[in-house]
Length: 140
Image (tube, rainbow, N blue to C red):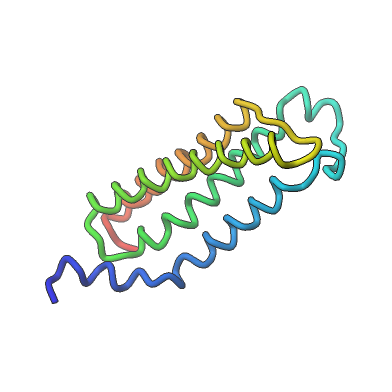
């Protein structure tokens, strides 16, 4: 077996279970009908608090998929490529959840602000993971 294949072996699917679980949690949350969502104070609406929730949910989602990559034996360059792919996939998932809400979930709608917040979450995880990777010098 050549050395380029060996690092990929250690990335067993089980290392991605936390990210997969979080993915389905996000799906469940975005599928809650609008009339079942808790009512919030006006000041939370004024500061767009829901955008912070979107950023947080999608940052955690992306990071949970990046963490096994950080801990893998891949080169820094390969890890960086995976981080970018995961961040882009997270942004696409955010757009998809907004489309799901618009067409399939009563009382929910599509907003570009939520899409942007979801993307910011994914790219926040990207920047944090890259910082962590280079800070630790490729150590787990």
